[in-house]
Image (cartoon, rainbow, N blue to C red; front, side, top):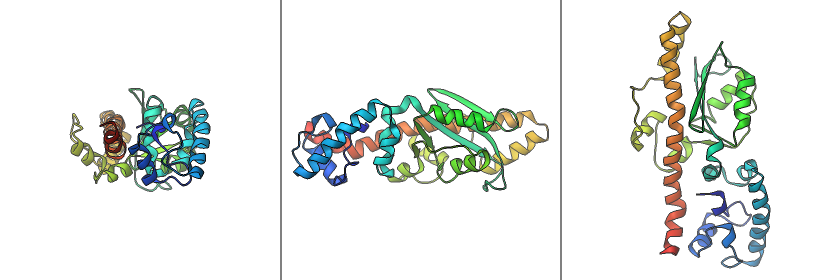
Length: 252
């Protein structure tokens, strides 16, 4: 589903009205002709479309993130998938005021980069990665990864953000990332490690075990890269449930 299929940013257009538009064949901004809704809402939709076309052409994803309900931010992905940044961190604990970030992996355009504490993990590098992205994608990142990075590195992570935990729940996919990966058929080459294992591996590395760091980085990178696969699965399922289930009836 693309941004151009959406009408819910318009005042007076909720999910029911949007579905009515789709059911009547108005599945794209360019198909809107003023029918289906009343004249006041029609004027608002036309005004929105005029502004939205310009914002979309300018690559202003933040405009749509602000306009869309948070629960619909997954709709942004298809328009900016090449500029989406998938991010996952490992830490020495759960409290950003007392614990440290050990590794940060970012995945974009099929490439994964990992930064390691006391090597190349710096605020400057993290900020540069965030500024390259149009959309941030995490799992439980709104409650954990982003606050940790903001506290420990004072980065500005205010770009549009899809926390996959919430659209997963909308689809009935509960539990942590690894469980959801298994539920949707995403395979891993190696067994899972826990957050406690990640702390242990870092401590072993601090005591001189470089192999422990290699293992930690490998898992961090796998978590991050798999977010892209999960995002593709989730947005495809939501597209079918939210949009295609209605639009297909009109085409049929």
